[in-house]
Length: 330
Image 1 (cartoon, rainbow, N blue to C red):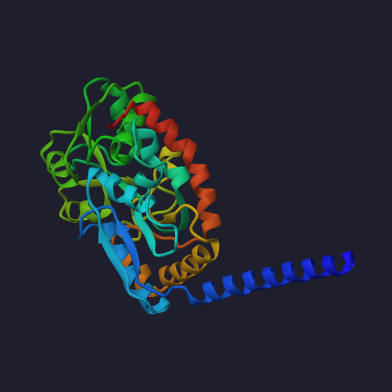
Image 2 (cartoon, rainbow, N blue to C red; image 1 turned 120 degrees about the vertical axis):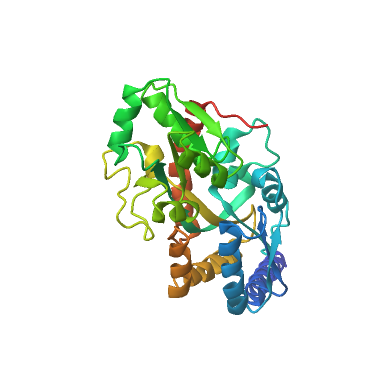
């Protein structure tokens, strides 16, 4: 009798496990069964929004469901990123944002309503966002080493611009100032356009800026590009060498900003893998690559596992650079 009961219990357990597995497979195969939302924590029309909309259109065709853009601008991206972090982890809400909100903010803010490392599951990097180093064309500075020499000769006399406290332009400029003991002045602007206007007018000495915003100034001769950040040259500025090509081995000039896709933590792994595979296929399309390249970015498209390795490698770099800069946001 006991032997019979034991066999019955084992049989029931096996049946329950089989039912669970079949149910899970059916659920995975049925995904998605309703519209998907991509939260973009910035206003419409910016680079992140454009890439998100490019992705949404093609993702909708591939998944057979509408993929909607939800622009949640506010607090430099914090508002929308927090909304994404607190969304249900069911595979129907994703975040498309800059690395600032997903990685760097945790070092900048004293109080952040979400924890970037804990509250998100990484899906895929969409594009790298290197920047270019700019000077006034009336100066004698032709390359990054000329700028370094100029900085060393003029301690406490020079200034650099940024599009805001904690931006890459601020952190890189602060790093140069600290590492060269230059005591340079940081001029923070509300956006790249007024910063570049002052660089043209000679109110500041140099600035890092996106190629998308800076290229018209470069093409018209109003500004001179002397370097780009990252591991490779930009396709829109092919003649401009990287900082590393010019001998700057510092990590801050090796890493770049990026635009990526993430999901609320605890989103099912099979859903993450499915969406990541579709995203990688979309980023690999020639028309997607062309659009991203023309914006001054570099297409990526990687797996959650590859993205996680990059995130872990860049974590201590940004932590160190932010601490060195002294930047803090409320």
